Image 1: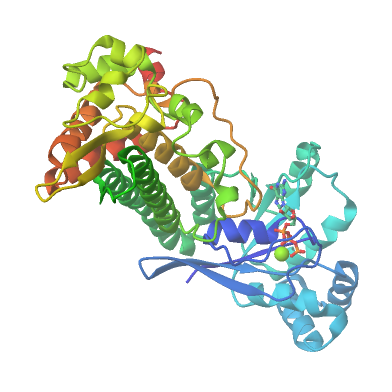
Image 2 (image 1 turned 180 degrees about the horizontal axis):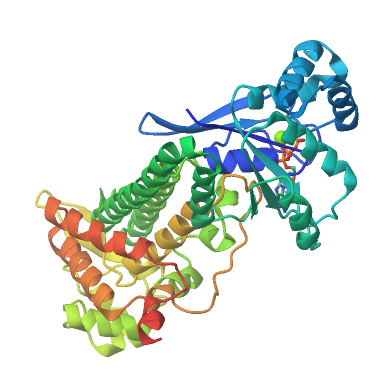
Length: 469
Ligand SMILES: Nc1nc2c(ncn2[C@@H]2O[C@H](COP(=O)(O)OP(=O)(O)OP(=O)(O)O)[C@@H](O)[C@H]2O)c(=O)[nH]1
Ligand SMILES: [Mg+2]
């Protein structure tokens, strides 16, 4: 299998690059120089098919001494790789050259070289020594300019690196998105004729896998939404209890189940993208931490009142309800049920009128309170909006980022308003049917297709806008 050894100065993001390209959360990354102590192999495989291996290595510690040794022992240029081999053989147990031996060994075993530098710090002559040592190995090599800080020394670096590396690329270890990763793999294919077929295969597999992950995520999100749209709670009203407080409890239970299901779906989606370890606070976007049932979230992620009204009336959801019900008090949303209406009305989007609530008398006496399914018109849109943003953050999240992802989504507009009217109608129709008829295989599939189309878009960058321009 093709191997690439990621080498360079200590603390330049070598391990971060390995984590990204191998999609591995186990790679040790830290701000302390000298974190990586041994050459560690991380294979990248899809469905059990190993595609390539990244070797994480310690940074150079005494490049000057190594080069001096090499120069002193070389007779002619063709023997250079052998001299490097000899160096490693003789210094295997020499603590002073532990790191150099670790990083050179995989290269001598045939690995391609990925030399990592930081383009935000000035170039210096000490780096040239490292580049010369790498040149001595004779292995195919590429330089990656990582961007850790704020400075800009790209052109200095470019000039220096061009002399020692056949390919020089800027690759921001933390911000590289999926497209940047694919481009890098394509560049690997250029390094060595023999590596072209396996690397082309790797790119194809990665693209296929990407599509597969999106489809899997769409199915999971659709499944979760159907669950949430069909949850119901009921309980007998015991003597001494009043129906109102029972209804409140049941609404609480219902909301709790919905929150759990949403969380479960998020973890499942993260699993598809091999981000299982991602902590909840790391996924965000604080916006996503917002409780599913807060009014702010409903405005941000769901449809605007206007769109809700348009979409609703086109699909029959609002039939029988006055326009008042949506733009005004919304009392009717609750009142549509049979039996006694329980609970006060706060606002049109939030808690109290989330779900149908009924109190029915039992044949044998006593009352039963029924809450659910959720009928609030905006609920499925809010749920989808949140799932869309979450999926996007996970899918584009780089495996090297360990701090909170900063969100660039513009707040303040209703997220789901940004999709086209057609997509909205299609989704609305399926969701309406789920709400009316419950779960079915056909509806599951239709909803998953609609969700997959949604996930393929970038939240906030509306395709409505794209259509216009
Ligand atoms: N802002 C930013 N920080 C980065 C980037 N790449 C790496 N870092 C940070 O730089 C530090 C070193 O990253 P590592 O990937 O551990 O570097 P390394 O070259 O493997 O380090 P050693 O194993 O110690 O030689 C960590 O704190 C990273 O989070 C980047 O592209 N941007
Ligand atoms: Mg490291």
